[in-house]
Length: 216
Image 1 (tube, one colour):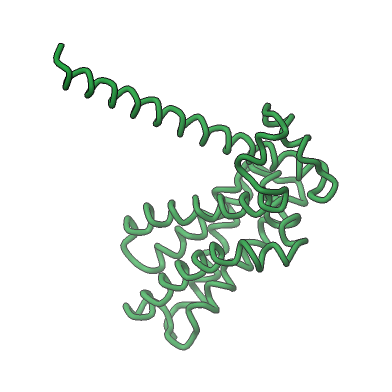
Image 2: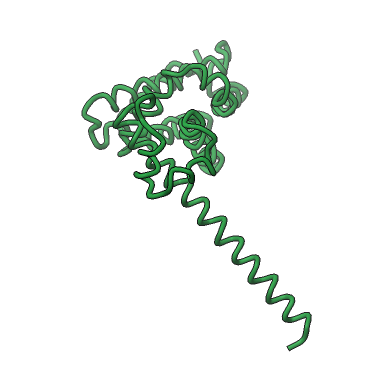
């Protein structure tokens, strides 16, 4: 076997090892996030200890700090991770919808759909995170703004196409949409968290929003 072939094989082996390491690291981070949701929902954010999260995730206490600088950062990361997934779904799903009303309806379905069956997550995002406005302002605001901007673009496009009335601020609609979705998720998490309730609520909320946005 030639020297160049051996070198190529070594490079390929290193690349596969690097990819495997990245996947393993990503899996561990995701495991920590899932464990944090359960611990924060059970104990409350302020009473929860990092050691509890580590135990629930099946990792050493110090491992947490390899991925998150503090418990505060872990909490914010839960919110940011959820927003990032929502934005990714929107980038994938919205181009498949033909009209602005269909796109706005899909936004509502996606956000509530992500929480279906995730009562602990809904509780952490809607109740626990809002207890610390300082964290939201300092760290989570950029991701949240990106999310509102994405909804506002859907509304603005609908106004240009004539599907939506043009006398309402797109960002106002975006904030109102988020507020309604947040309120629905909050009452669902605090109540019986009935299976399928969020999907039904998504249909009804979309109907209300779209009627309000219909051209006069």
